[in-house]
Each structure stands twice: as C-alpha cells, then as structure tokens.
Image (cartoon, rainbow over all chains, first blue to last red; front, top):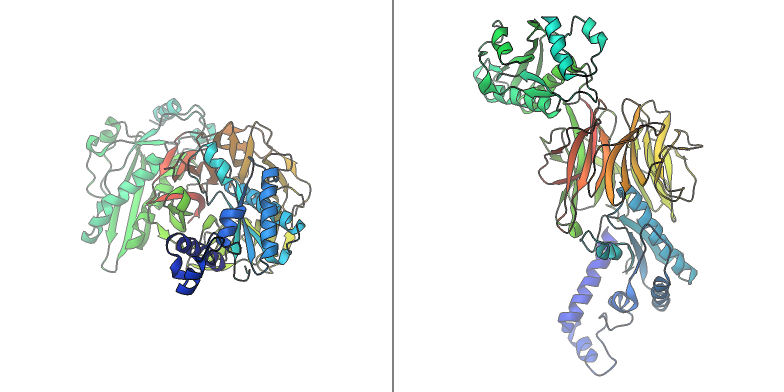
Length: 171
Length: 441
C-alpha cells in the first residue's frame, strides 16, 4: 500500500497546490510559471508532464458495461492518450486499478475488476508501453466513487483507473 | 403422562419420529422439520446463586440460556412473572404441578457458585414437566469469570441437544469484517465474536482493507484477504496470539477467496494471473501448490465437501456465474445450478447434504440452499443485497451479510434457519459483513 498511498498523496498535494497556492512550489518556479501565456507551474494540472495533467487532461479512467471488460471505442480513445503520455514521460510507472459496481458478489467482483484492469494494461502494452512499467490491481466493489444505488452511480463505479506512480513498483 | 406429552409434542410437530417416542430416555423431543411452527414452551427460573460471588452471574447466565433457546425459534420461554413455583435451592424437589399449570413442557433449573479465585461453576438439570422426570443427567461446567457467557451457551447447547436430538451450536464463535464509515470511505477490520454478537474482539486495525475471513476447522486459525501490500493477498492468522502472515501461494497478481480443507491441512483459493482467475490448492505443511482449474473464465469461491473429496465453486464459463462441483484434486466439473439468474459463493454444509449460495436474479439477491446435485433449490431470503452464507456448526442455521440500498447503505449480519424461518439480525457494535461461523468449542 505504501507506494500507492504515496502516489495518491503526491497527486493530491500537487493538485491542491496547483489550485490554491502555486507559490508553494517555490518563489522562482511560481514567478516563472506566471510569466506569460502558455506557461504553467511545474507539477500543476497545466504541466503536460505532471500526473495531475494526466488525470485531468488525458483522462485517467475508462468505464465498462455491466459485467463486461471489453474496451469501448470511447475507452480506446482515452487509452490512446494514456499510452502517448506514458511514452512521453518514461520516468513514470502506472498501476491500473480495476473496479466493479456493487451489484455482484465480493469474490466475483474482485476477479471482474482484475479483468477490466488487465484489459487496460494489455491495451497499453499493445501501444508500446513496456510491461515492466505497468501493474494492475482489483478492488472489486470495495472502493466505489459514487454511492447511490442507481445505474447513474454504478456506471461511474465500473471503471479502471490508471494511477501514475513515481516510486518503483513492488508488491 | 408420557402419552399426553407425546400428544402435545405431536400437536406442534407434524413429523414426530417414532424412534423418539420409543426412546423412553428422552420422551420430550421437538423434531426440527418444515412442520414445526409452534415453539415448545419452556421455563428457566433464574439460576440459584450458591455463593455471594455468584450473584452477579446467576441471573445473567439463565438469561443467556433463554436467549439462546428462544433465539432458535423452536422454543418459547414462559415469562418469569408467570411462574408459580419459586426455585430457591438446586436440590429441592421440582413442583411439577406448578409448572404444568403454566404449560411449561420443559423446565431448566440451575445453580451457580463462584469462589474467591474467580472460578465460576454452573450446574443444571432439564426436566420433562409432564412426564415428571429429569431429561438426561444433571451436568456442570466451570470457567473463569470472563467465560461465564460460554458456560451459559454450554448449558443451552445441552438443553437444545436433549430436546431436538440435534448437535448444538451456541458455544461457537464467528469471525467477520467490522465496517465503519460511508460506502465511499469504508474502513474494515477483522473481528471475532460469540455467535450471538457478544464479546467482540478486533484482530486487525483498519489500516488495510480486509475481506472474507474463514475459520479453520478447529477455530484456531483464520484465512483472510488483505491489501496490506497494496495488492490482495491471502493471509493466515493465529487466533490465539493474533499473529498473521502472508500465505505464499505462487505467482499472480492477486490471491483471494481462501478456504481450509476439512482436515485443516490444505487451503483452496483463487489466483489471478493476467485477466484470468483460477482455483488452486496449497498444502500448508509443504507449501506445494496445485492448479485445480484451467479455464479462461473466472473460477472462484471454492468450498470443500465435509469429507474432503469434492469442491464446489463458482464459474462464469457458461457466460454467467453458476455453481460447479469437481473432485478435490481437480478435473472435470459438473454444473449443478440451472435456475434463473446467477449463482455464487457456494458453501458446503457441515452435514454434507446441502450447498448454500448467493443468488442474483431480477435485481434482487437471495441466500438459498440446494442439494449437492442442484435439486431442491430453496431461496431463504430476498433483499437488495444478501451475500456470503456461512453454516452453523450443526448445519441448521445460516448467517450472511445484508447490505442496504443507497448512499446511506450499510452492512449487517443476519441469520436464518435453513427452513427459511427465523430471519433475524445479529447484533454487532458497528456494520458487519463476511461472517464465517466457527466450530462448536
């Protein structure tokens, strides 16, 4: 869990900093970042090399149909963007987290989440990302984003999220 | 008098075993079948405190005995304020006429003593009121003061056995997942409790997600799945010292859904490799693992038959989750579920004759039981989300998780008889899921 938490914390810190107080990155960076059009604070959501940019602009997640793990045309577009970003930023690693909605038994949903995450991983590998930079994990129905018991929520919970990581992959 | 008693019992039991009638040693007998709908009336006057130190336990022990018996739905306690006779001494003659007058068919008397060292002793007798006879022999149990509720469960187990002819289940524990927080920030911890929800102890903190604990056959160890490493891995925990370690089950992204073999020497589990999840077995002594299924579909939730010869599991090889039975060494599997909907989480009954499962159909979840060949399917519950059945040690009762709907939804444990009757919530201090019912202690 350590590296996952770290990745999330770093992402959250960067995102928060970018939104609220760019100067927390340091006076020089901040003043340089504010220098003109087309510039940005490093690590901010506007920095194309930042995980925050990956999440917000490239799109870190794809959604799935009920009980399915096949990638929709929309999902493929997002994943093409993810593959390009990972190619352009070879220092980053990624963990793909697969999830299911609550309509299903616990063990089955774990396995289903693994299918979904693996489908994303295989797609990224096919697009040229080295397998060694990728790992996946399933949370089944344990980590819903949306908590209503309606299809509107379920649709958002049936997802695979690519989490960018800066530390080495272990576990 | 026995004739009258038999008539009374027949009035409440549609199927009264002739064997029980002939067995003069135990004429008062309630037969647990579909037909039993009128609970057998009994009385438990407060147990007599024979020493001053026993006063704090005596009444409570008799209350736990009554809660156990009444909780089965098979027995009905006659309230203490209706009692005519007063039991002030364990050795005093039973005033059968007074108990008959209030229609108590069974009477349980008891006494408790406690000494300065904290040792508590409870003795009890069960009486067949209308026969004017003792049912079985008086017995006594002893423990330290902290174990006094177990003494009560042991007494209730004896009474249950003598009145039903069944093996009992009250002196047993349940390991489960304690849940707090909303659905999108839920914290989970392993916990253990008495079967009735008392004496909850936590086995893990909430720093890592934990799922689906499973007792070993003797109750000494617990298998569970933890995200401690960031990835789901099977852990094995010793209940006595709460020490846990990862089970090295082989290369895979995730290992989960573990369960012990009936002799406690093997673990069956699911291992995910790539997109595929299959079932494996591990010999705990040697660490040797063996693949039991090799299909591109999801194979999970394996459970041994009590003789250790077969394994029931779920697979979506047909396109949806269904139940299959295969030899414990792997090999060809027979599909056993053929009704509408999806079937998962099969668990073989300790009696060997039935399999409990979760069924999902038309947007509802059910706990059900079927014969091991899939016949005589019977759904016991229905709700927004019921899942994960576990059997009482005697195979008469099933406990499971029920999650309620919506943003405020939470999970709780329920139990139900395999007849479908006596559905009730098991009290836990917080939310609870994934129960695993341990052996009779």
